[in-house]
Structures are given as C-alpha cells and as structure tokens.
Length: 291
Image 1 (tube, one colour):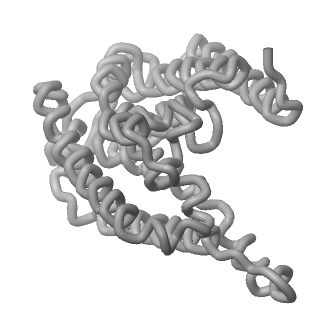
Image 2 (cartoon, helix red, strand yellow; image 1 turned 180 degrees about the vertical axis):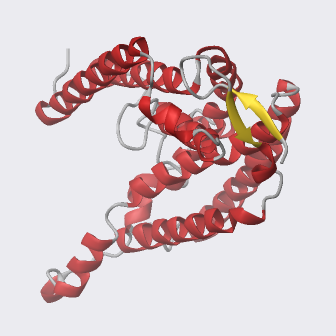
C-alpha cells in the first residue's frame, strides 16, 4: 500500500495518509447522492416560496406543512460549501502538493463561472420576454427591476456584497459569488494547514471568519445578512477540507485525542473564542443592534 506523510494533527508528528484510497474516485458516488438530494431540496425550497395562497386556502394545513418541511434551504447551501472543501482536498491528498495556483484558478473559473454566465444570460432572456407576465409574482418582488448596475455586479460576482443587488435577476445566484471567492482563498488555506496543521488552521479560520462576519453585521457593511457575503462560509469550507484529510488518514486516534497538552490548551481557548463569537453574533441578530 502506498502511503505518504502529512500533517493533520498539531504535534507535527508523522501521520500516514492512505493516498491509494483517494487515487480512485469511484467511492465518491455517495457525495453525488448528497449533492443531488441537497439540490432537489433547494429546488423545492424555492418552488414553495414562490407560491402565494390567498383566500380560504391561505392557512391550508398541507401548504403550511410544505412551508415548514422546505423552509431550511439555506442549510442545503451550507452542505454544498462543506462538500466543496472536501472534494477539492481529495486530489491534493493524492498528489501531496498544490501545484500551479494559476492553473487552479483557471480550472475553477472554467468550471464555475462559465456555466454561471450561461445561466445568467438565460435568466436575462427570460426576464426580457416574460417580465410582463411575471410582474406580480413573488420572484419579481426581489429580482426586479434589472439595472445596469446589478448586471455588472453579477458579472463580477460581487453582487452578494450589496443588499440592493444580492437577490436581483435570480436570487439563487448569491451563493455562486460566495463560493467562487472562497476558491481564491483555498491555496492560502492549504499552505496554512501544511505549516500549522489542519486542526489549528481550522480554528484560526473559524475565529477570523466569524469575527469579520460579526463586524460586518454590527456595522452593516458587505451585506452580512442571510443571502450576503457570508464570510463565515470560509470555516465551513475548510471543515470539509479537514474532513477529507482526516477521512483518509490512517492514524485517526492521534488526530482526535490531541495527545500533547499544549494542543489541548490551544483547542480549549479556541472553542471558548468560537463560543463567545457565536453568542455575540446571536445577540446582535436577536436585538438587531447597530451603531
């Protein structure tokens, strides 16, 4: 069996990673199944949200059940972000080096941006020909009017930074910009993990991303709402990358126990910091605090 060394745990000791287990992608069919279920759920989520029930049927129990059952579409996006980190990490485990960063950006752009531009163009065509018929729909309330500003922001994939444009044209497009920008940070995440270990890097990214998100929320910048910049997704993304590293690591016990005492102290402080940030973020959202 071909094995190589890697650094998942924080004690810098040699940890064996089974590169043979990730040399074949046949075992990833379960990831496609998760993606398919999550994508179908998002479709149902958006479809139900577009339905307006009026009159005597406004409180129909079946429709209320559908609203409740499909009301967690945002969590499906969280799953996609975690899976992205997991899948992007697998070839790096096999190769044991990142390779050309420029080539990585080109491949990600070809895979994400080109299909996105196609969907954006198709949506604009549909709006042009069907806008009159859909003027009174739920979708039109958030997607229209289409302006030159909203178009160029979508083309640059920065529309999610602005509350006035995040849901324009097609509200589902906000997450594309978020994920694409995380891809630009992935090489940095990888090199930090190689230097400091995946566990420490996870806590570093989590604390920094949630702190920045809390600052954006408090000062009302960069659209820190539900369909906004979502800086905290950096933590979810790297969680997936760390999970891929851990899943293909032979000595899993070592990574779980954090054997050396210094690492335990660091982890306890990190957990306390993350808990404090989460509490502050929750209070800000609950009391709608602002400067």
